[in-house]
Image 1 (tube, rainbow, N blue to C red):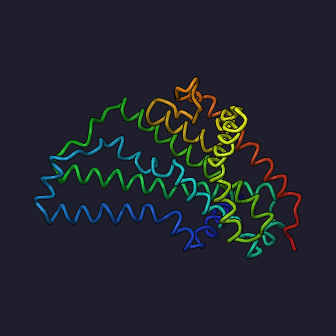
Image 2 (spheres, rainbow, N blue to C red; image 1 turned 90 degrees about the horizontal axis):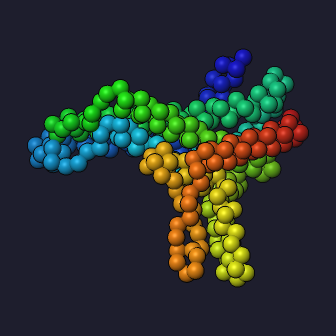
Image 3 (tube, rainbow, N blue to C red; image 1 turned 135 degrees about the vertical axis):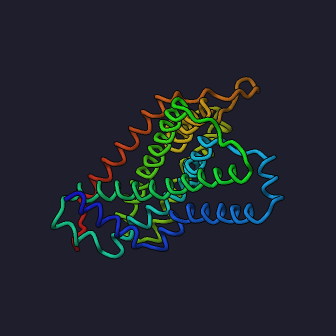
Length: 295
């Protein structure tokens, strides 16, 4: 049953061709075109091959992670938010939910939708990471360069980091999907949901402005609240995974001397993100079960 539900959801999501192309598949396609062009130039130009031999190329374990670094940032979250808004609002605008409610529980319907959107996004970004990694490998071959050391320890570390980057992307997609689903339940419009979800994602960082204003006018430091928003904690987790150090949140300094605040510990940021996901999923499921989607 769940396999059929997943397959059906995948077909529906893939069927929104323009949204899938502009917000999901455009990245792997652009990477394929870019490295394909470089490969043709390398084949035809001895001078370019010499530049590759003399230039700097990343080792394979870094190259295959570049695709995830592109999505696991603020811009990547905006792209994911836009795509999920279109997917969820489309169910209301085109009235497709009511076709499935008599045959499936609402909880299974919505959870399958969340999982499928996440899997769809993960598939596209995995494809891009593979294209980028293979592309840099081709450049190393054309330049007669080493593509970095390979042994069991490096491979195990790479697999661990790769899996965590995938999990981070999936989590960001879940959060964006909850925003999109809740917005769509009230607006029932693709266009309105699109803009509202983008604004909600932007406001996670936008909270800094009123917090700085409160400090400026009332000398009240509430910037610690920013440590609990998803945007900061996703960025902090990514920083811990990629650099081994956290991402310092904005601060106001002490005695006129600005000292960057200590970042959240990795474990704390992971806990905060789990709380956000559980809370958003619970609210979304509660609202979805109680609303009228059959008329």
